[in-house]
Length: 163
Image 1: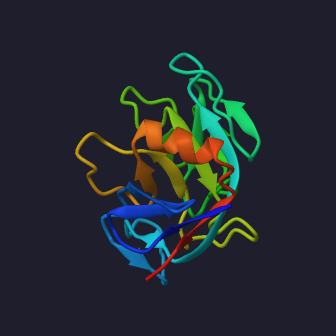
Image 2: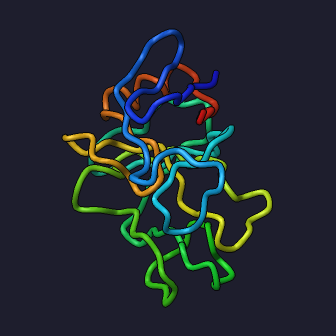
């Protein structure tokens, strides 16, 4: 089942509306690395990652995998592992997935620029936990932890981001 993001502040799933945050660059069809935009179009849920020291494995329609402290995501367009999960340390620019805050306690890896990967067209587009004030993301879609767990358990298979 697919969710829909048709505004910068809400996601609709199974007939319910959930408060959400999107990228600081808005929703854009011409997504580029570092622009802070959430890409328009269908984003399949590829897998779900979670912090096993903070919560149990969430129920989800996609494969679920526990994170470890050395997990990261490469966001360096010049590196061969661009837009892929990597083991830290790595010399290339990357995001650490094991964070002190709770934003990545659950991560839905969304299918953006991954089939095939094109350098510079955006990386690390996730469905993750929102900050308490629902501040804009770097291009992801964010929900409260409770809402994220609810839609994952409800059979989420992807998100359609509309302009």
